[in-house]
Length: 366
Image (cartoon, rainbow, N blue to C red; front, side, top):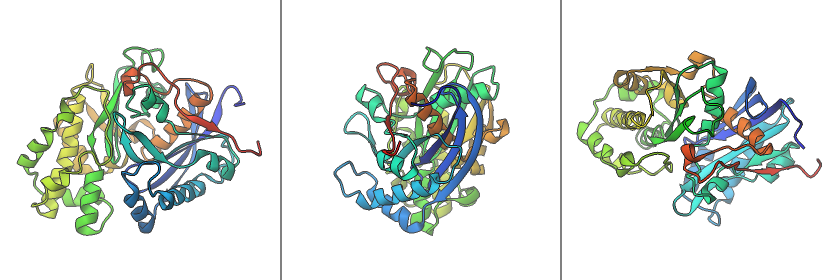
């Protein structure tokens, strides 16, 4: 039984950028954020990334054994040695996401991780939401609601995560609870870093466009950008979500361009998806707070600032850690699951009713 009151929860996130595992402590009762603790990053090696890449798109029953070994070893290493941890939130590695079809697949065995760590582990956060008609993503919005309260926001604010896929959360911090009507709107904006990273690996053998240096030297191909924005996804009303490779043909749109022009165009596409997404906000946010690896790309950030009327800033400007925010989110959500509190609702995933998603596994020694 999880003790009452504040808990030190250890969250883990391995995103669709496939760069590594983030692990971070958060102190919370599942509603209020009381503080943040130590964190750690465990990078995937080039060989491990290759194994994970080969498993992308596979569903349970496919040949994922090698990828699962990578995921479990990396998470065990990343999550070990946090003395304060009382509970773990384990997201796993998303391999496939098709909420309107086969469902969603996050690779990783939470029960085995609980045994390895000697701690209770909450995992499989998305499946219950999908079973009830939701998109299963994004799941960080309930945490973003708590973050807006933590930073003392008194007007609507938006959080933008630029990972492999971009996702946006609009928060009204004056709402009483995240599941209340009008408190949140959340959805995936489109591809973010994934196509840029794929381009860099294919053409330069590099994992990403560090500092946006390649894109900065290129010109945006407006024709390709217009074709990208013709995708039906941008006409859909939220909530809505994407698989990492839902826009895989983006690479084809820039296939004839130079490396620099291709990088600039893919970066512009990612930013344009965000701009289209901002149109769905009920009211303009006072500021857009950016987390995830994309906030380190000055070309991406400048494109957003040039097109938006609100302030655009990394979450560090309000005292949050943009490298660890998603890991902290799954620590926070783990406490909510353990206490039967909802982790998603109609406004965040389209689920029919607010649902607490996740499986709690305890080590047998407990």
